[in-house]
Image (tube, rainbow, N blue to C red; front, side, top):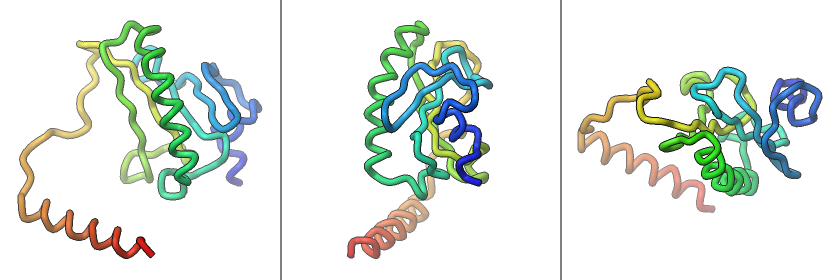
Length: 142
């Protein structure tokens, strides 16, 4: 049942969490498996599996909260920077199926590596991908 997932239970305060922020639509709490000290999770209180079923209004609200929390987390944790990460579906490393943003304070030398190695792409593949995306967007403009 969707409402019995751990983040839904946390949102209803039926499961424990170190909550650092809450409003009518969202909640932020500490990750119990932190990448770095201060690693915070931001969720909508309503259940959305991931970005593929998240509505634009909720997404905008969550980003406004992330913008509010980011400098506070950076200051509180003495961080040099901050990553905002999101995973959608198992192929992209999603393991908890309730939309959430990871706000991860970063310091130089914290040992976290980038998730991919940046290298030049094939211009023909880049062009073909752009064409596919533009075509798919046109199909949704009805």
